[in-house]
Image (tube, rainbow, N blue to C red; front, side, top):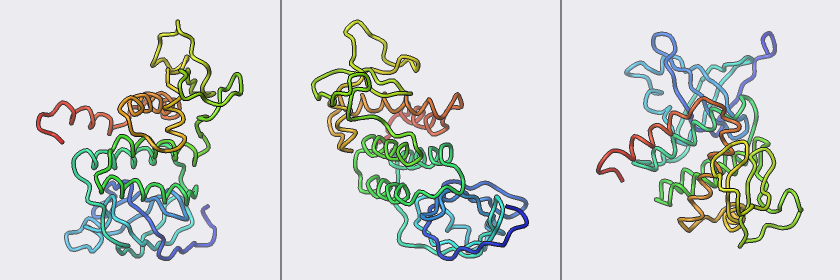
Length: 252
């Protein structure tokens, strides 16, 4: 809001989602703040070789940030670490970058999501500890959609209202939810018709406890179809990185 009182925020818990060059020596840093949500900050001089900010404004590093501003972009006036950075490598690193891109694409600026912030921090910790990355990502995707108002229906059939049966197959329609799956319906990845998914997968995702390969495969297919509805036609850059990495020999 231009022309309003200048707002000052002190020592906000935050993570960096993305940096881009700004003018000769500065950055525009997109952050995810615990109490402020996603917003952009101008980090003056952060690209200078001797800048204290140069090595600090990195993804996956818990930070305490201070800034001022009353418009679309704030001015960063202080930054300090808030614990140790999550040491992500290999597939865990790509998974962390994927979460950052999802937040950049789907979370509006200046829209606080304190619980999602905590879930994001927990997901980073799980990745750093070597937990199975595809399980971590599916749970985070589910939590993120809930936080931004697009939560999945995972507990009942949208047509009959009956509770999900662990042994039954369903057709999940991205704009509505699960309905009983017909045996002659063989489509699996059409947006309009939805995707086939087992009741066990729906209930496992609801419990945020994904273990078997079958459940993980179905959950991945389900989340891809659902997310496509909100991401639109522009592909995620990190998905291309995942595919390129999968084709490279010797990757872990």
